[in-house]
Length: 254
Image (cartoon, rainbow, N blue to C red; front, side, top):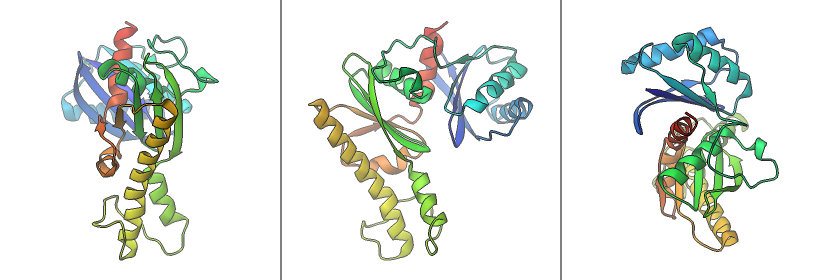
């Protein structure tokens, strides 16, 4: 089994692959103050839910947008399985070109999503990644990364409404019956769910206009299933696109 680890700002996703088959996905909170010993203990605990032990994992690869955890997670994996993890970054073979001002600044998660979309669905494409931030990446017909748009994430906006205002409460992320809210809760849900769906639709329209053609769109990230069904464009949800990209990169580099 190959263990893929995607370290995000809010959560760390771990997926186990047998060949191209994703056997399981588990999620733990991102906590930058934890040590490698603490992460090793937590990882062993959550993987035990799926019967994954010390003898199952033969290789590991890590994508991270939280630099302080890079060495911590590599050491945690080595403590458990005695293996050196691949880290997505300079020097790793991706098979895609990066056409932007500073290629080294492109997030590892964006690279993984591009690799997966190109390898699984083909190019060109737009990739909407809805995590802590909402990112829309453009991949051209040759499978090259040509740019990205970054917006505040869905939950970031929802939490800000409650935390930065005097009278708005915390509400669950779900769609109301109508875009026209009749109470505070439904009004907030309308703005967050339908507002983010409209934002994604609008950005797709702008990018397609710049590209001169309508590109296939794929969505990933934890909140994508809550927002994408309310978009007007045809968008395919692949919630674990980054993990699939990590698996492709592991096989490409071994």
